[in-house]
Each structure stands twice: as structure tokens, then as C-alpha cells.
Image 1 (cartoon, helix red, strand yellow):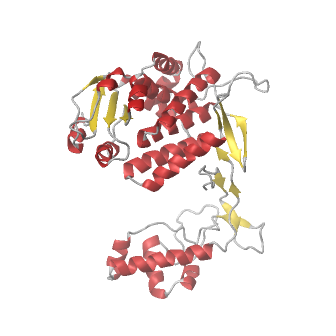
Image 2 (cartoon, rainbow, N blue to C red; image 1 turned 180 degrees about the horizontal axis):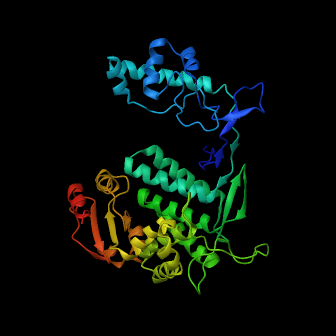
Image 3 (spheres, helix red, strand yellow; image 1 turned 60 degrees about the vertical axis):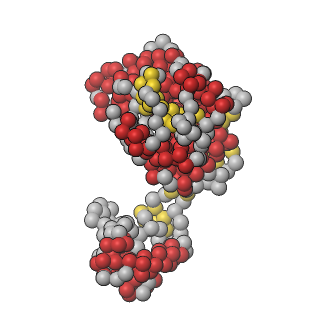
Length: 398
């Protein structure tokens, strides 16, 4: 599902042909599901038993709810038991079981590769990729997993190169096989901006923050209803539209308005620009009837309201990006749930000057006795800095 350049494809069909000789006869999950007999034919008897225990395989199939009758006698593999539990169950050494299962997985993958693959929808959508960037950036930071962090970075750089025109300020909606097209909608601008903000707070490449600000400015120019508040889904000037609407439902995807409001509030804290906060407040006011009558329809907007009404904190780190002492402070922050906060890193004189344009107090923030330091601020009034991760953890609890 990943393009060679780092972007993420849109979808893969659920149905595929179970038999290459009959390509038009398809069934759901055919590429991925297994009968017990198929697995036994590929693995030795002992390894097969271990594999069954580890991945929840049943002789009669493990799909309990099969309304269309497509999974009879088939198994959807899942991690039913840990390797250690499997070894304990069969009273065998863990490393022996782990090695056998690793080999079994490779054997199964090689066998599956000979099946007919489901069709791949290989278009790269900017809005969906924004969500993926957020997920991988946050996951990489929370789990300290470099693979996830790199996936987020590559996807962001892919969109910057293929979907963003810095000269015109236009963000395009989709990319496929070398061609980018369709001016972006509100959700493209909002979700990509959110991804860039999450990526910045995980990896601190200031280019991503600067682009998030630029995209937000363009979003306001193209989609904002300055009179009533909130954002239209489409830009003005499209003669094919009967009317412009404002999305007010957080479903499988959060609405562009909900994400836009939270982006504006985060950027207002970072830049101290009053127009960003005023834009967010006006948008919330536009949705008050909807929030009052059906709050469950807008959970993401409720999160934005919590940020707006809550006690937002500014957390500023001073240290070298990638240095161990900086990393220790970040680990303490990223492993905790700290809502209603922004996170900045001062790692150079140039960055200090850029960030101090929004938060002047940053000019006076420095390391503590040569070590990376963290400043916890409320309404830009800051506590004394700390350099110990444990002490930082204590401060952010309150």
C-alpha cells in the first residue's frame, strides 16, 4: 500500500479470484484466508500445531459470523497467542518455537504470493495521506519506533513534492503514476496540515511547521466563511456546484471543519496570531446548534472545543535535535497523554529567532547547565526549566 516515493495508496479490493484459471469468479478475502488443510500441506506437523495456536487456526475455520457464507472452513489469521504462550502451551523452548514460527510465516508468505492478488487502487489522496502521516508520526514518537517515524516523514515529503505548489499556494487532491490533479478540498488542506503539525511535534523539522502555517493561510483564503464562520468543503468559483456546504459530521474520517478548528487553535498557541484563534472561535460558534443537539456527531470538534476552553500549555525544549538528553525529555513527553498542549524545540539560533516571533519568551530560554532543558508554560508564563526526565514527568501531570 506504499508508493515507491513514500505516499500511501487508497485501497485494495476485498474480493479476489481464488483460482487463477477462473479470474472472474471472486470471493471476499480469498487472497488472505486459509483452510487448515492448506496450512498442514505447507508445514511439518509440529510446526503446524504451533502455528495454529499462535494464529488462531481452527480445523473447521475460525470465522464465527459469516452472513454471506464466504468463509466456510477458512481461517483469518490473527495473533491469538504470544510466542511465549505458545511455547509454554507445548512445553518447548521459546527460541525454538520462535524460529520455527518465523520460518513458517515466510513459507506461508511465499505460498500466498502465488495467489491472484486483489486489485489495488493506487491513487494517493492528500487527505487520507494526512491521516496516515499523523498516525505514523504519533505512533513513531509514542513507541520510539524509527520505521513509523520514517514512514511519516517520507509520506510528508512525497506530498510536498507531488501535491503542493508553493508558487500558487494550491494543494492538489490526488496523485497517480506521476500525475497530480484536482485542486484540493477543505479536508485535503486540513488533514495534511494536521499531519504536518503532528510530524513537527514528533521530529521538529521546522519546514513542516512553516508549511502547516502556509497551508492554513491558504485554507482560510479559499474556504472560510468570514461572515458566519466555519469552512466550506469546496472553494469559491466552481460553476458546476449548486451550493457550497459545510461538513458537520465526524464519521469514518473527521470532518474538515473539526480538524481545521483544532489546527487553528494549535497554530494560535505556536504563533500567537490572534486571527487564527478568532477564526477557530467563529467556526465553533457556527456549529453551536449542531454541537448542542447532536454532540456525538462531532467528537473531533468536541476535542477542539476542549482545547479552546481548557488550560492549554506550551512546552518548549531547548537542546540539539537527536541528542540523547533531548531524546530523554521527549520520551517522557511522548509516552504520556498530554492533551491541550503544543510542543516546540529550540535547536539553533535561527530556530530560536523564528519561534520567538510568536512566543517572545523563547529568546530567554536556554539549556540548563549544558543539558537539554524543558520549559512548561501556561498562557506563556513559564515555570523554571528542568533537565531531568523524571521531574518533567511530574510537572506535566498537573
